[in-house]
Image 1 (tube, rainbow, N blue to C red):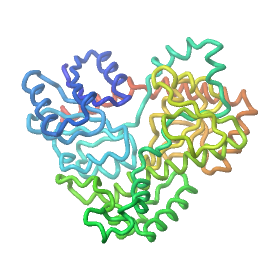
Image 2: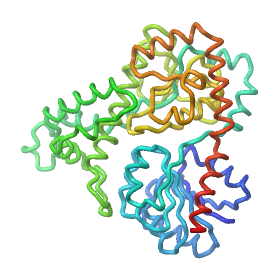
Image 3: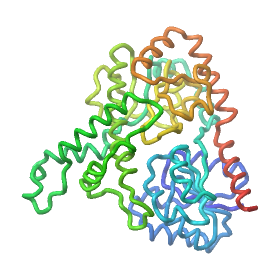
Image 4: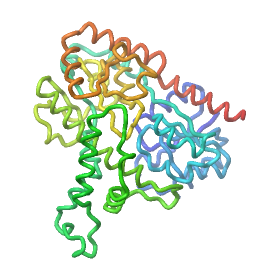
Length: 414
């Protein structure tokens, strides 16, 4: 079997590629988007066409959804297989989502339930996974100095989303020179009114107190949605969408990202008042107080050592992931780390809370559990071992891709 793996440099790609190869699949890779982010859909389609006309491909695969690939594969009647690992993915609103030759796998059940009715025979649910063997090769060879280097009461690895928060750029634009009086400037873009800013602030404060259920989208009114969409000249409104994307994107891509930034800043600052909190990030950390900020950690070499050596690994799932488990959950457990994460509705489907990992549903509960597990080492270590063993047995890329191929085989028979 030969396939084409269309790559754009997702951190998941090397592990998926390796497993496909281990399964005996001949994997060709197209890597032009790994170095050139200006590739147009037309160029993408042309390149995939070259592959399809020169190789007997069983399917074309990508991480996340590329409409240009979908249309091209549909033309040639070759399955296009993609696995979504992010949320939101605006491209899922393309009419290409409805193509017959799609085989789309979505990791967040809420995301799956939202998009599945658009192409029910060809959209599937598939949670994320981790590469336990890769992590074992690193953590089992750690030396004493590395355990000391990466030790912490609480560690967090990840973005603070300050640099990815489009909502902030719109708020800041309100008071920027030339934008405070849009009517006086012919080229000034629309601004967000005090009403909309106040409405969003109140909604976010309410959502920050609730875990396991996202109510932002249901409570946005048209005025707020339209103002935010109009305020950003780069708002995603493709000419090939099958529905109005504004409510979904405002709630997930704008407010959801702002929520992630607020939650991470507040949580880290609060914990740092009482515990040694180490942060590994390339984001701006100027708003943090008392947090031990150490810059970014290399995903493949340093991150697993952090997860394995830290007493408690904190995970804060960004709100656009409504019910699913982020990649960070699987990786921490796959490295044998103790995980304390915000509650997500899908966690009980895969893990036993208090046995394989721990969760929190309020800041007060988070503080209490950090304090408890720092003083109950035996329980903490046992939970980390249980989480690792369950992940190694049931939640690796081998298991996930075997399930994917099983579904693809059934589709082919049908």
